[in-house]
Image 1 (tube, rainbow, N blue to C red):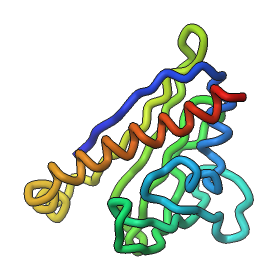
Image 2 (image 1 turned 180 degrees about the horizontal axis):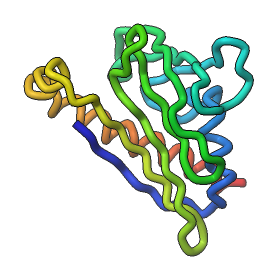
Image 3 (image 1 turned 120 degrees about the vertical axis):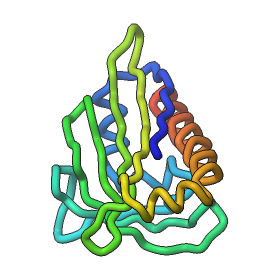
Image 4 (image 1 turned 90 degrees about the vertical axis):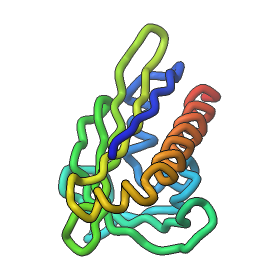
Length: 151
């Protein structure tokens, strides 16, 4: 109930982190999240800050808003958030930025909670969702790469 994708980008970790951690950029990169906005008066990333994303599931629909809460926020190194259903996390997304050679290895990952409901879902449809998530993470990272390497 976890997977990750890593793409090397010829850009400094901080520059890439700045793009990813400003959730208002999400719609530029994600194939499923059309846009995102800060909640509760927040204007930038910090652990505990909430935002919501406008999602088009599987790139086709249905469309809905998801409230998220930032769980990891270390400039230039990590950015992560959990997707909430009410106050319960149903998925966690995480980015790791590791300086390597001429740039940065950027890893995007997802993790579903270890619960009975998740285990049932993963058994019935997880293979398809995992495939969609890996494809989406790959597309997201390559879109980010195109932006940071064109500067």
